Image 1 (cartoon, rainbow, N blue to C red):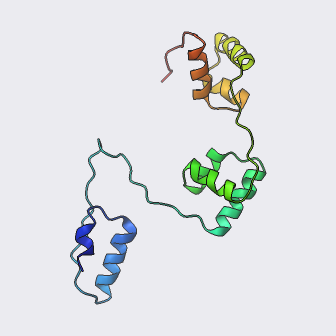
Image 2 (image 1 turned 90 degrees about the horizontal axis):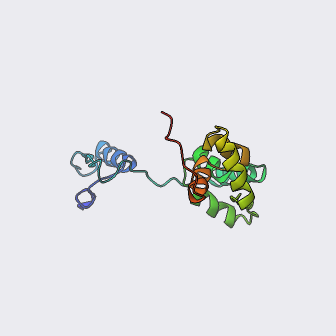
Image 3 (image 1 turned 135 degrees about the vertical axis):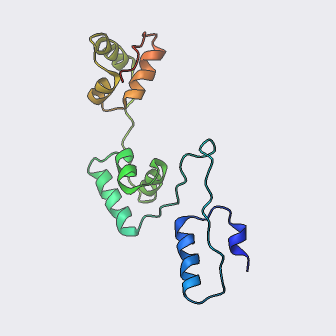
Amino acid sequence: MRLRDSLSNPGKPLARLFKALEGAGQAKIPQVELMVVDPSVATEIRECRMLSPDEVAELVEAYRHGATEQALARKYGVHRHTVDRHLERAGVAKRPMTKMTPAKVEQAKQLYGRGLSTNQIGKKFGISGSTVWKALKRAGVKMRPPVA
């Protein structure tokens, strides 16, 4: 069987399997060489992370107690959409997303004019700084250059 030849970039678990099979006296499997990926093509290769039923139950409970989807995604090492799908499958009522209403945009303009950063304003509103930045930019506010 020429399985290895059909896989140009095996992940670490598959590489461990090849080594285990070779060590167990199975048919000789050539040394697995991990391919160096061109940084311009992909900066990171992530393998799928499947959550155990216990982890999904913890995730659902944490969301019900106020954790955000983004925080849960970071904690469990999965994408935000994966968290969203688990919550949907569990029948969890999703909290509404906070939006930048015209009133909030006006308030953000005043705070930004007083020198607060978009991140500081975002924390006050419970949203990301990039959401505030985009709303201010759309409202025609002259944005300050980023601070290093």
